[in-house]
Length: 275
Ligand SMILES: C[S@@+](CC[C@H](N)C(=O)[O-])C[C@H]1O[C@@H](n2cnc3c(N)ncnc32)[C@H](O)[C@@H]1O
Image (cartoon, rainbow, N blue to C red):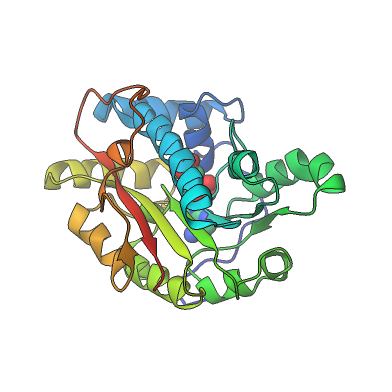
């Protein structure tokens, strides 16, 4: 852990909005509180597309998992910044396409850990292929060496690392591009990294939405960035077609879900192979 990182919290404070519970609200979940819902409504007033982006991001997640299983034979997933359990969790999607798929869920939020463990407890009695771990993604080595992660994933074999809608929670001072690079450097060739990230090409929008999220979450937020900042996360990786794009358009199904109606920001990203 570097000097600027805070230790992992074990306290759940429902009076202050959390990114995980705001995300849960946007996805139609029930694991959120008035403070989270008020923060979401404030955000929607500035960025009406926020809820649709959350839904479309989950659809991107589904397509990414299907592609990595069916086209690239991936059977291990490391879902970093996994969020609260929801409909169609990564293990449910992955095991639908590959029944033996293994999934390690990682999040720093203690509520994600508690709910994840509660949800998965029954499941884990019969299925030892999933685990929920509390760790901070800003320390990639500690995360990858966590015994619960290494207990389930074999990092000597290809793994898909999912950084979906999470790297915008990481401040510039914590160097998100370095975090991705250091993580990818620990993966075996043929592994994959998937990223989605909130971006805007409008400086005023970036500033307003970054400040709003930082205030709402008590600083548990990094930055809305430019697409070119996110491109740097993929240095030295082989980016799959169609490249880095609005994730709603990434190998989109013809029967697309809800369309984004306002374009103040988008979820931008893609998938890349570790050479
Ligand atoms: C917007 S949610 C995304 C959930 C899910 N990945 C998705 O795409 O639907 C972001 C999640 O990242 C988690 N998170 C934020 N910063 C983190 C960090 N430094 N380490 C681990 N998890 C983090 C939050 O607690 C939250 O659950």
